[in-house]
Length: 97
View 1 (spheres, rainbow, N blue to C red):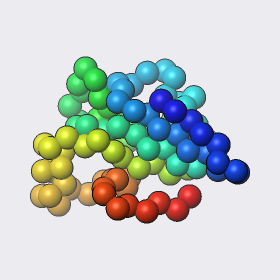
View 2 (tube, rainbow, N blue to C red):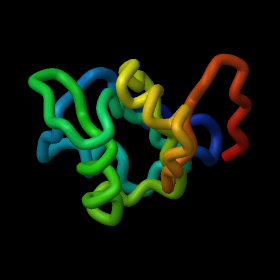
View 3 (cartoon, helix red, strand yellow):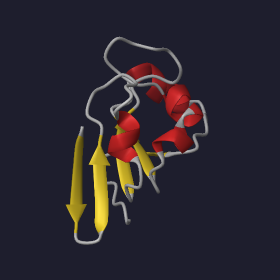
């Protein structure tokens, strides 16, 4: 992952990852954490899933979380009306933090 300080704001980015004990250190206190969430709830060998992020959000501790790198099955689920607790990144998204 990457963590940047931009003036008085902190931006963190997970990259492709599974859950690791270093993720809370990366995300904690960040004004914006952009995080991999390839599947809705199925664990994979290379990516996080939404269910884990939702369950462990307080452990991560960012002020705002935006999901990125959603797989096609997850996108299809969203197309069926699935509601999420976190914003999903899409082309042209503008985030204020």
